[in-house]
Image 1 (tube, rainbow, N blue to C red):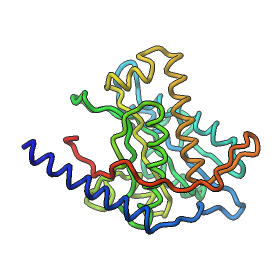
Image 2 (cartoon, rainbow, N blue to C red):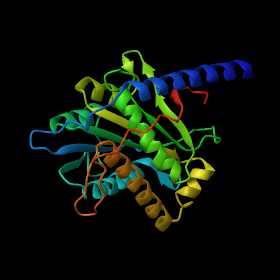
Image 3 (cartoon, rainbow, N blue to C red):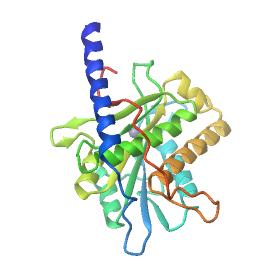
Image 4 (cartoon, rainbow, N blue to C red):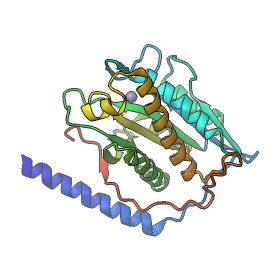
Length: 262
Ligand SMILES: [Zn+2]
């Protein structure tokens, strides 16, 4: 059983390496598309909300963490020139996956970041970050480059990295957000920042100390904003940060399919 698992893992890793090679050698991507008025439109989607709480691992409730995080990502990204940064829902409200993506479409989003926290439910050995992207070749390469940039940022904060992930369902991408964004041609990423039931990640989030939690979420928000700004080649006249000439990174994190067993 273990041998089989190792074999599968090696195959997946080999596939990841192949994808990485393909990605680094074949694609030179242009900066993101802009709306007619020249603005880059970024939509941030706080995972869950309202009746749907997401993971609840006291004292952490995912919907509150993701909303607070999204509000700070919006603050940091708003310092860049020619950007419009919108939240799918600015408060603790119910919203279907379809409504979230349709909102992004209605504002001509260039990029959609879906912000989540994970829970392993009985598998406490899991910890760290993973980024889910589409399997559709039209957007896979650039989303993989974003995921690499994002995971580099989160790794620098000391979080474990679980990889660049994809999950296949019966109609393409398993996750509705990813599938619908891809159908609209909107680049997206579903970011699972860390596990609310992993000791290491709970310590990162302050172990229940509310001031430490706020600071940790602001730190995560800065990392998210920095990765998005780099990927979209943003520039800030206010702060002097200029990512206009940012070069896509080599893919060094494993590119792996979702698996219930890892
Ligand atoms: Zn979630």
